Image (cartoon, rainbow, N blue to C red):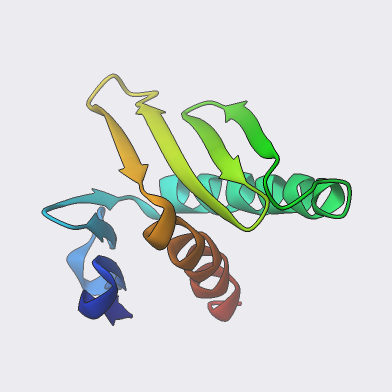
Length: 123
């Protein structure tokens, strides 16, 4: 799925071999292995569960910050219950590469749910 109008890209192409998932925001992108994307999907799902369990307890203007870590990923959600940003830190277990991603408020929610949808559509 490509969402150029929304300033982000999420692509899957198994023909590419090892790095078959691409996530891009604005002027950057990163390719992930299937196992890395799956680990990201698991953490996004866990973060979504935490957010949903807290959402009814929060007022619209109240700030929220959630963090979750499971190597190789660290994810941080910050904002309000209906609008938030995401920051990701990836530390390669093979010590081959590390990177950080930041998704601002208008992009974070779309990508958050599209990662979940993309992985679940492969079952």
